[in-house]
Amino acid sequence: MTTVTERDALRDALGLLRDREQVAERLLESSAKHSFDPDKELDWDAPVEVGKWFWPPELLSLYDTPLWRKMSEEQRMDLARHEAASLASLGIWFEIILMQLLVRHIYDKSLTSNHVRYALTEIADECRHSMMFARMIKKGGAPTYRVPRVYHNLARVLKTVSTTPGSFAATLLGEEILDWMQRLTFPDERVQTIVRGVTRIHVVEEARHVRYAREELRRQMVSAPRWERELTRISCGEAARVFATCFVNPQVYENVGLDRREAVAQVKASGHRREVMQSGAGRLTEFLDDIGVMNGLSRRLWRSSGLLA
Image 1: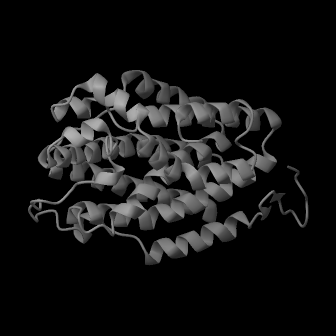
Image 2: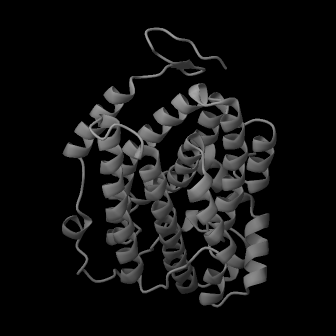
Image 3: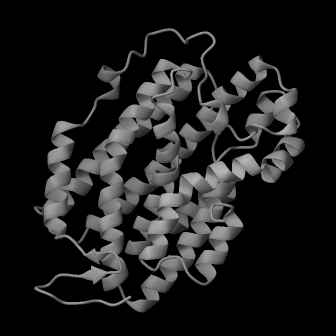
């Protein structure tokens, strides 16, 4: 992978990078046309719909396992309610981290640039998303599921020492897998209307966030010092391992009356679950591979996470 200077342009394996200000200008235009206020857009007062899922059954961690086949339909739907709450809790945790990383990214940049304006716009989006997810958890009546304390505190270190490319790589990790699942959720008429509305809003607005992060990560991987690129590869691989570990809080299984150890073991052994997670990460891992993030130790860490075949 080489850096080529052509009228101050940068090029990577995917081609010529677009001008940073032009990318941000287009994203700002899209934000002006396609942004939502969840408090007004969604009917939070509507009752929970009897017989509808809080998450598509095929995306649940235990789907098609021996334990799943023993569960009643009521217990399966209860699992969906709790897993949706677990994923929403993970999303809030991640978005709070992301907002802090974005503030760090723009701290030394031109305050009047489109690039900074869009970062601030994205932070506003993420604030609304976090409140929306919290409201969805409350609506479903499930508890909030925090990530394990060790990872919660590890994130404090990440927010302090993360490199700029590392921040954007982690951003994509947290956004793209959930985005893939949500694209399957919002058109699914088996799912609660409120959950479909939440995922629809998130998919539309996250598409801009992914574009912003991808463009900036490409730029960083051809312009950052070698040590920073190497650290990004390792930190991204480790983040994949942590993210996969935290994806569903094991307390979910106890809360629906299942044996925690047995459930965790069956999820780990599930070929269906492995396929779902790798499919969700597929576009991201291909992109990271193309731009030189995924090699050596990074690739081994991704494979150990179960997100890469």
